[in-house]
Amino acid sequence: MVIERIQMSVLTSSTTQASMLQSSSPLLMDVQDVDSTKKQEKSVGYDGISNTQRVWTSLVSGAIAGALAKTAIAPLDRTKINFQISQQPYSAKAALNFIINTLKTEGLLSLWRGNSATMVRIVPYSAVQFTAHEQWKRILGINGTEREKPGLNFLAGALAGITSQGATYPLDLMRARMAVTQKNEYKTLRQIFVRIYMEEGVLAYYRGFTATLLGVIPYAGCSFFTYDLFRNLLTVYTVRFPIPGFSTSLICGAIAGMVAQTSSYPLDIVRRRMQTSATKGEHYHTISSTIMKVYREEGLMAFYKGLSMNWVKGPIAVGISFATYDTIRDTLRKIIISQSTSPKM
Image (cartoon, rainbow, N blue to C red; front, side, top):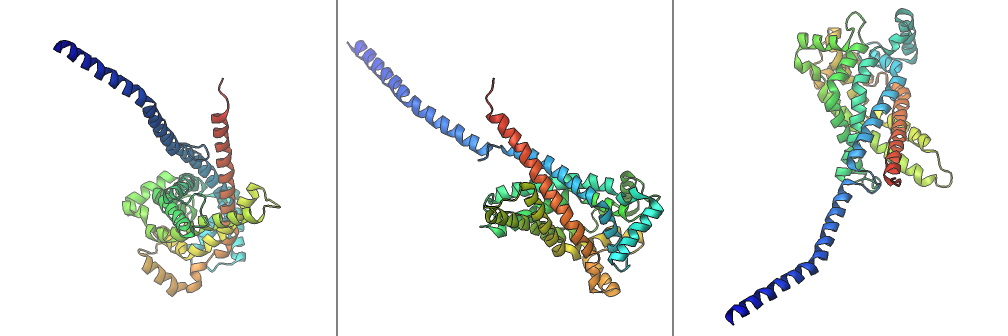
């Protein structure tokens, strides 16, 4: 009898456990479904694009946008740098004479001298900058709420500029050296790299970096902030008569470029003097000493030398850059979404 009672109790308990497992299995499945849904929501955004796809589409779009924009304004850029690092007074006539003399003595392609170095630098710079801006906006939680959080929007742009500048600064220094020297001085990027290392040391690759960072904070911050601000305004106030997307990006980018160039231009002068001082036999070692030397020898307006040319080339370059980036990025993401939503055979 005792044995039978023990057997009956064991059977009863096992049956109870089985029924409990059966009743709880739908609940476990629901919990697993919720967890998997949350994981999908984290990996895929509200627009159906994962963060990995968001990063590589931004990198590709930013690289192409930067290359196209810089190539378009390369002759004006070389002319501007020439005046920035010299004591020659700037004027539109003097800039035109420089271009004409360069054409006569060195040929048409010489106006694009240093552009290969620019491409080596601007392709990764622009790719990193646009990607970093999008990622910083995501981290700061301001995607789609730029108008409500203008301070954070400015910060996202400034952080994007710092990120990209820190990653590519030595290439910018070498590009500036090529732009202000003759062909027989620096023929290739490799020659510049080796000579700087042999003659000036490793730290020379980051000469003027602090001034660059101080300049890139207002430049990148104002650029992205102004672009997002005007793009949102145009979207709201042109509902009845909408402007095509590429034209909107071009207009807003041009305005952003003018604002950004003006806000950071004096520090750009300081940066160029420090970058190219070794090629001119002059000594600009620190930001403060460079500012004082330029002010004593050339006056206050020297810090804005060539700014009027920047008002021409800056809006063109930034407008092309933003418009190209938006167009290529949106096209790539539409292709990704269409492929993911299309029925599989």
